[in-house]
Length: 247
Image 1 (cartoon, rainbow, N blue to C red):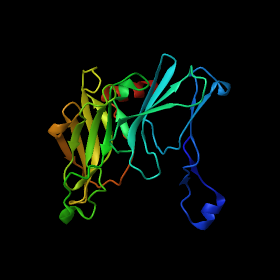
Image 2 (cartoon, rainbow, N blue to C red):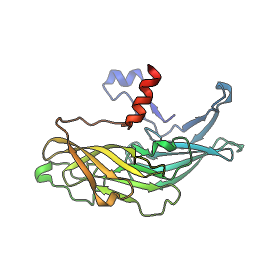
Image 3 (tube, one colour):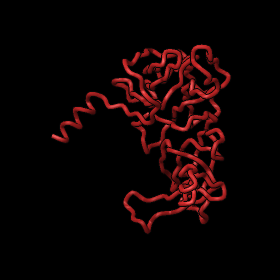
């Protein structure tokens, strides 16, 4: 639980419904898969601002969770790891920075969901990259112009970066495994970009192991999409299996 509050007075005043409160702690509940409400273990930490976590796994009676986190309501996000020690005698949890990439929606190779894993992918607004205001409008410094791959096992390693271009802004990415491969991170990063010079939408497909090489394909969509969140890939085999189960 993050420290966002609301009240009838706020609604009546016309202010935004939710407000982040720096005076309140962050609370995280850990529930065993086969447990009930009485088995929840609550941990408490400093006020943080976040939307969606990336992944979590357990081992040695610890739960580790990685997620994009801001220390304040509008401060840049960072990828952090929270560690919950179920053997501890207090309710504090550990926190460390994994990546300073500033996107708020991080993704992974979904085949490793809830398992130990190595790579994460996230959008990043890099103000040092060029932006063409003449054709793309007054959006310099406010576009998500990169996807980043960060290494959870070696956070100090150089991060692989895909730069989309000087008039585009990227939405949340998704991971597509390479057909026939079982290696983590062997596949493609896919994401929709808004092209502000053409006022059009594009689907960018990037090799997840060679992001610096640029997109291996760009699909010009025949319609314009609004900004959105959350994307998942289902292969033809996945869809066939789902159809068979529902038959």
